Image (cartoon, rainbow, N blue to C red; front, side, top):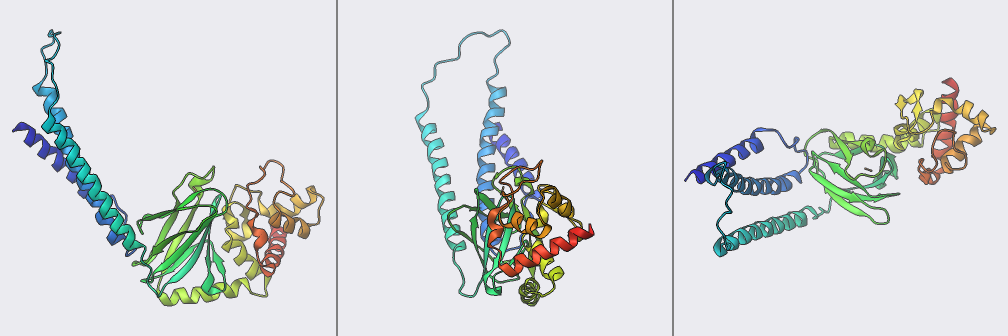
Length: 332
Ligand code: CUA
């Protein structure tokens, strides 16, 4: 009898902790309404098991206590077949139920509506890049998404395994070099949500963050347009600044003109000084350092940290970036 009371007490306590505290951030995607019930089902099962185990432990502490001077052995027990069947069968059934339900939900989350946007996500130590094939391949350091529209994320990594995670979307997926993993997100709430790397990927893992910005449909279309325009602008200060921002340079480098304060790589405000020390002309020094980062390593900084992928920047964007770095570093 007291065992039952104890179990109910623990179940009540566990339920209160689960329900009264705000464990989950605001749901901002359609997928959350599929994923959250799985979460709560598992929590419910966990509370059920916790209540039984905790009640038996606490009950036994008091019911089977021996006097302080009792040094005799306990009675020999041969086990209890019925109990063993029960505590094997129930957990087996529960785990299978979780597995089946999860498989159904995962299958449903993988269904891609015909009308959708596609974004190519590239992960590298320690930055995210988002590319929009429908907008002429414009890239961005932020994940902009239109409201109430399914977006297919095609993700790959340039170096090690990372993981794409947005808590408000409830979705997490590994981003693996040499293969493309996918995730479908249908944002249902305007706002800005942190994109977090959820796989320990090196020294800068904790800093590998970006923003997922959910925008109204029209604002998103306007942004897409302005993106492809900015990087193609004839003015190097407009185009170069856009290339700098879109490629996440500011995550690792400081450059006063952009407000970037990255500390992983050398400060770009000092480029004229670095170039003089390397005994190279400024423009050539900057260009080589972007397309072939290991050609010259600034003393005090490690090799193989700067991604080699910027060699693939379109020539116009690379030219604009070099021009921009020359003019803004000379000011600084
Ligand atoms: Cu990328 Cu952790």
